[in-house]
Length: 114
Image (cartoon, rainbow, N blue to C red; front, side):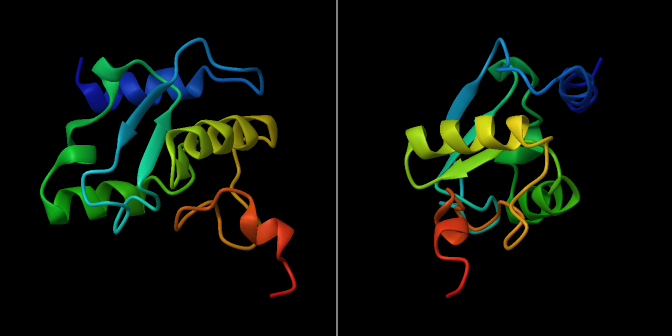
């Protein structure tokens, strides 16, 4: 079983309840491709796909192809954790304004008119 397959199988089993495992890691490229300096995954570390930490092309491609996967992003570990739980609670979708990308931590909802 590949990490990519194991990751997707774990994500498919998620519900709107708090996941039993959360892994918070720094983004390899400081959020350029990942959308935040810190990332919160709703899985154990061992099944996070290698492309998350791959070269520029692989990392950018993985995050582009997985924009709707519930991953918390933030400027701090706490923001990434809270964003992950919000995305799970709200039905695995990102923010209507930014899709949960670019380090989103709820600020664009609070400042929706800007």
